Image 1 (cartoon, one colour):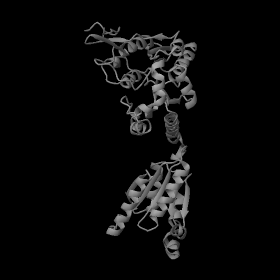
Image 2 (tube, one colour):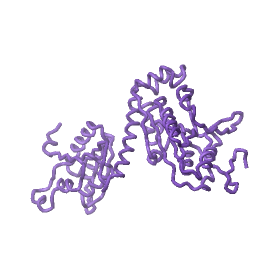
Image 3 (tube, one colour):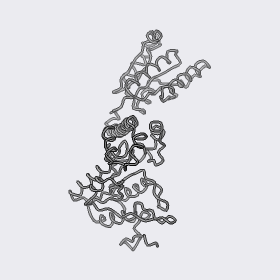
Image 4 (cartoon, helix red, strand yellow):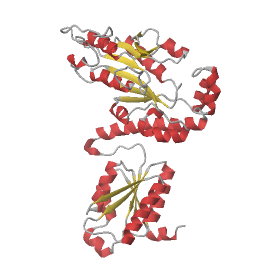
Length: 394
């Protein structure tokens, strides 16, 4: 047994991250993430503020890992909170330090097994890659261990570290972010708080030396901290939190009803020639609303498309991708039900369809697609585009 192994009181079993289950958690810990658009917005400061507030209420609060980056205000805000010492890892001639998850578990579990007071651990920089020799590769994996032990965690991260946004952030900033957090960590979080400042305020903080040391300031302004980058990253952070709120709202809404925050546009195309014009109209609508675009083709299971029809649908799919939309193809004999199912899956708020190509006699016998959709769809706007207008449009 190494010198760094901690020993618990129950049968002298080692109390570490590999054996924390010896003390079954009454519940999984709750996870709150403070997210921002860039370094320096105040995520860590805000997390420490809330930690102080809970401590004053009698809750046991400890700092599992704090990264001040030599920021005086952040270091001062941590004063008065217990900080778990970092663990040392020999690495060649160097000694590296990182978060000591075992020490956190020992500190929290030893005092909480017989107490009803919840425990809270503050852990900075969720996307951090652990130093060589650590039991786990990423800090978020350590956070999952702490949460599984029934301990609440507050953590921080920047939006550019979210896995699904990696390519987009690289296009915006020209920087490929190496340290990333899986989307599931955000999805499973109990609460997400965006710590927001304007790009101008963040640039002022940078110039005042509150984010980086003087030699790095101008380089940062010329690269990552350009105003256009900060505007785009700020929008990403705000949208990410809004999406999370929307997911929770939908999950808690009775009868599976929609409770959307963002607009989402669905264009329903078919083998009819006006589908391309419908798609262009829907793309313009999505652009006006700053909304994602989806295109749906419902294939009839009882018939095969002709070569010409297949080429037409392929053209629609290609055009949809040119508009940076998502093309969806389903097989269903009931077109209205298929549209309603896709609308529910993708949380659509606006649907664009062409006017019915059926004769009045057919509509009298079977009803129009529009009528069926009106009955099936709730809280979704339906745009019916007349063929004559579409043909004459330029």
